[in-house]
Length: 123
Image (cartoon, rainbow, N blue to C red):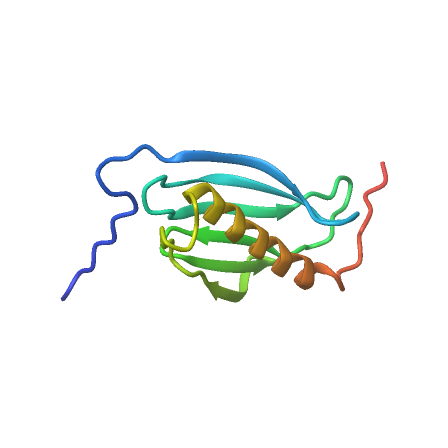
């Protein structure tokens, strides 16, 4: 049996931690938690909608370090997106690439979550 080994990070480079909130419009606040490799731009992160006191089952995204984004709802993968890999000629820095990827993922999440009605929790 042939085994494929995928190295997440090359040359033992320490990943850069991502903890941020992205704002897209009045109802588009998304939390990003994860990390990326500063040499090759590989990202591992979860992107979720911030909705306090809301129990609706929103779509969220998991970005794998093999340039794949999985869109998940109710514990099941409902869609996926293949990212373009980091090319130094296309971007001034890895950070610019990471921001571009995160913005694209948030735009896809906004489209996926636009028809989901909030389910407010009342205490």
